[in-house]
Image 1 (cartoon, rainbow, N blue to C red):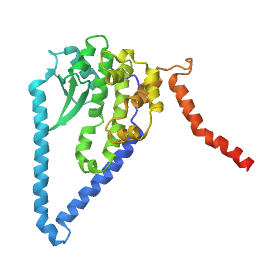
Image 2 (spheres, rainbow, N blue to C red):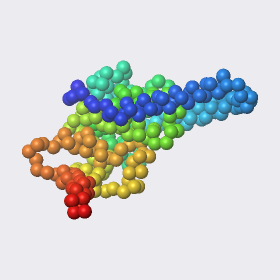
Image 3 (cartoon, rainbow, N blue to C red):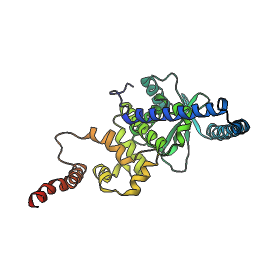
Image 4 (cartoon, rainbow, N blue to C red):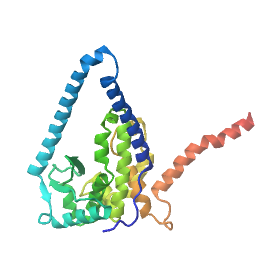
Length: 294
């Protein structure tokens, strides 16, 4: 399974990554300087406490993550050559197409009806967890949509997003930066998933939006048009603090346009865009007339 074309790395991913590197480097440098070189008496008394608390926090996070991995291994169904072999074959083919050094461990987890999947990493091992309701769709009539979701998660591994976030952990405390970087990474992984499963990209995102029983009935034009019709501060702010872009924007940016043809008439989205552009330009058109009158 070769990608149909090269995937696109979202430009803001590299931009925010550079900022995260700078912020983290400054934090690491400052910590090292004040702990080992600064001649401040209070530092000498508190650096041991700092190391103690840092170790305690690291151990707590390690144990919490270890418990999560242990729960997955003890309760989820591992996908392999003898268990859901067709899904495993897809993971192997996509991993090969992306040039991964090894195939990640894949697990099927029942999550009470949630539609999602995620990639994670623990002690140098990559994992992909697919919620059962997503995988059910592959056995009904839309395996391509599931292939897209799997390809998306493999994209996180391909781009080393998990390792980068761990190394650049100090930058996570900078407001909005970590969320902005994560959203850019999601766009990149959507592109990777679309290259690996172009027929499933559109339906894969709709599956996450509307659920496995209703996503085929969604009017795509109307849904994408919500990006321009539904506005306001809280919608904007909710996305800015979220690790994932709005699904309407993801669908339009990576999949929606590729399914349109030049011969088609204007869609609802095109009309909404034109109306929004007209409203933005209207003051500029009226202003010269007012100047002439005055």
